[in-house]
Length: 140
Image (tube, rainbow, N blue to C red):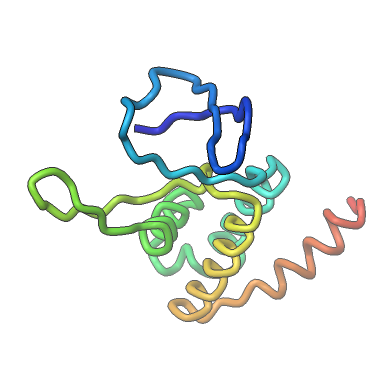
């Protein structure tokens, strides 16, 4: 179950939370991950990079139809983990980039670049040069 919560009060190592839905039962162990969520700007940059890989990096020639397909492959490779479900069954759970903090998302993008370079021999240096010239400096 995934819930969002707002910290109401902190006293020592005890925290009072207000949750956005039905709260977990007493005694249930929860994991709290905090940090700033990635911005829309960083999300847009990620999709620009994926589209560049498809259109200009030659990834389309490797069988990828679009950036969404590449995104799903990268998530499956970099954001999956084995978890134990009921009855001892192990399942693979694929994470979501929307759940990453800013730092985690930055690390994820770096890992994507390394993975694409390893598998396809494509570096993003040309993309970053274009990005510097066109986007970050307010160019055309």
